[in-house]
Amino acid sequence: MSEHFPHIVEEECIACGTCEELCPEVFRLNEGLGFAQVVNPGGGSEDKIQEAIDACPVQCIHWTNQG
Image (cartoon, rainbow, N blue to C red; front, side):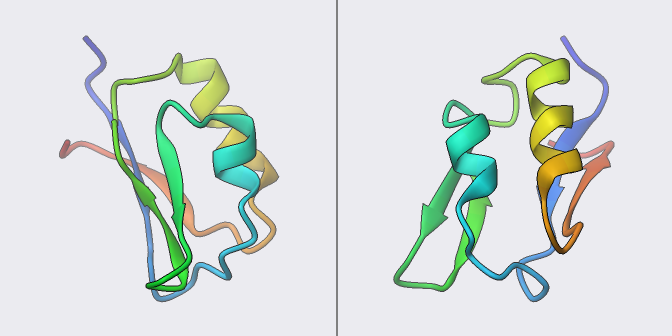
């Protein structure tokens, strides 16, 4: 299992949905709250999660050591 997990800085998220589009196993856009959330930190490959991190237009997704 991975030693690091994706984390979204919710205050910085603009709810564009890119992360969910690229990696729906891990990310979900919560339109009611106005930001995306990590719903299953270990649900996708590190490469797929990294693709979502790299594609985020405001760079609010980061790796953390806490799941």
